[in-house]
Amino acid sequence: MALLSRERMLDALIDLCGRSPGRTRSEFVAMALRCALGLSEAEAAVIVAPQGRGLERTVVRRGDPDVETSEFTGSDSPLMQSLHRSAMPITVASVADDLRVATQDRGPGLAAGPALFVPLRFRQQERGYLAVYRPPGAGGFGAEDVRLLVLLAGWTTLAMENHRLTQSVKKLAVTDDLTRVYNYRFLKSALRREIKRAARYKQDLSIIMIDVDNLKSYNDRHGHLRGSHLLREMAGLLADQVRSWDLVAKYGGDEFTIILPQTPVEGALIAADRLRTAIVEHTFPMATQGQITISAGVATFPADGDSVQSLIRAADVALYAAKKNGRNRVERGEREAA
Image 1: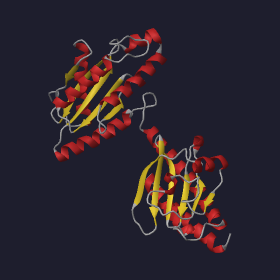
Image 2: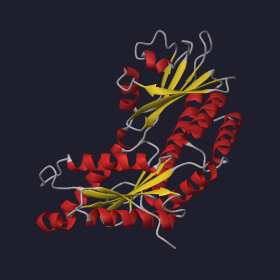
Image 3: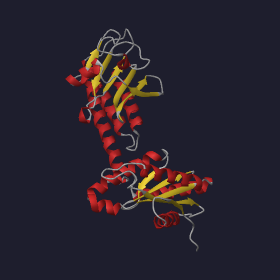
Image 4: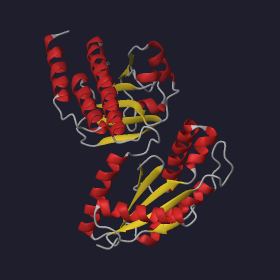
């Protein structure tokens, strides 16, 4: 490798490695693409990589500060299949004339000139690639370009996997192992934050405390393992019934707490009853419909409590009343007298 190429590669890696470890995935991908532009003297660069359950395509063009991101639907294109069957880079003299290059592989709005595609190898055989493009009439990509882009692609793949693992570890730290919803520790910090926000902007805030009725008898009949599966299924049902900005957390052994920002008591009571209905109408394994129910207590800031402790206490008192008054019902909490 020529000295100049080594220096270019080293400068690119130093630039990427020297950034804050707290960068987002999108920020990192954009930086990797700009490095690819500099290393290959290309006019545009694309990364196709797994995101969620599908593939995401990110495009950067020379001289354009904007980064374009969209869903990628070409996972079965001949080019993609060839890349990951051979695990080798593919150089293309003209993307307009190469039958392996589908429309999706050209990148949105990119001119049909020479291109270089380098496979990105992720976990579990997931597909992706790093691609660079030059305008029509420009010289094609040579062996030196391939070597540089292969090195950058390998580093990029490793860094993206490390970022994914870091995010997974962070999620595990705030997630209940059993139910996959937020844990008690995160609940307290989130509720403290929401109370401060509600107080500052004079907004409504409510919480719902939920307890599973008769879980002990279910465990006695079917075992604690079945009971654990039931709690996990119930957590998913609760999460499906609330808004995207509401927060569902595990509170205790068979208790959940839901934070409802910008929600007055009337709205919280409606939400709690919707949750109760969803559970009573659901058929859980080894139980008949209606056999598994929940009781719920609702409390609102600041009427029922103006701190984490007092608000949870008010909702807990309301939950106790719901259990005492027959279960499978919703009750409202009240601030305890000083």
